[in-house]
Length: 403
Image 1: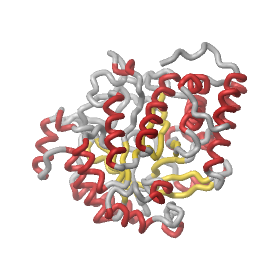
Image 2 (image 1 turned 135 degrees about the vertical axis):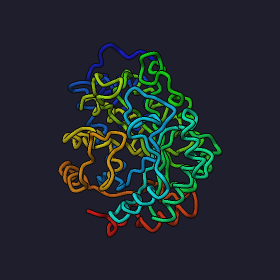
Image 3 (image 1 turned 60 degrees about the vertical axis):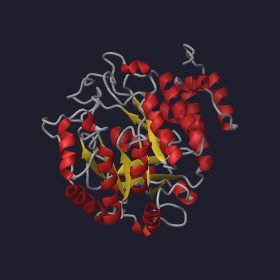
């Protein structure tokens, strides 16, 4: 990582901004300048990010996905310093969903107008917990990825919801088994910083949070033709410059495969039962800087998402940064990763979006442009299910939206 200047003048930021507006591909050093912008420099950054976004989206649409959240298992082989989702086998709240439970929740979501089934779980928990291996064996499965593939297929075929699976690192064979039943998949890079793996760091002692492992999964997905969601988690001990490095690592993957359909900029939330319960949370300005910097680094075409439930009632300010997606919102299930942060009602989300001059449109778990390209359909089953839901523009048919 190149050292950033101690101070960044508004003039320097304006020069970088002008090159971005002219279509130049920005460097790491450019990114370091942007992400430290303040005052007039930050205002110039936000203005440019909005202009660049509008150049690709003159219709001023912001998207969201109406989803049901399926926490398939909260057992995991990792222990991150900020996570409350993961439980040990004997801990209160530890649970692995049965096929009947999966289908019951998915069907209830379909009735409420959901189009996406977000399948989220810990990474290969059987490698840490023999109890998970026993559970899988009793259900007739040899591994967690095998179970994920079966539940993805069950949801797709029985309910018509489009699965989007986040299950951690996957090798080629595991990706091949899961991908045909998922419209898209995801794995957060979180951060490329090696410091976070040092003792007392949030990733110390984890098995799957090394950036090279997660980038390898993104590469495997790209080779398989799977559209992926990834992103960074800010406020877990990384520097602003390391955020830039992480975004550029994602840009490199996209340059290789064109399979990164969206980048999430997610802010850390301190939780009372974690090791990081006393850590400071990123400010709204931190989010604005990072989102706008992401827009300039990634260019106009990339979809950039910020979760609306992690910033109280100020989330509409994110729309000044060139971001264009709110992510998944559920009318049925909570955010099991951040259970303290309720999703906004779609009516409120629409009101806040329109108050900033944007139109809110529903998408599937596969973004409209990826739907229209056609080659990102992972199987005929996924293509047929997607076709039933979307119009000629790739968005969810308006008569199918639940307002």
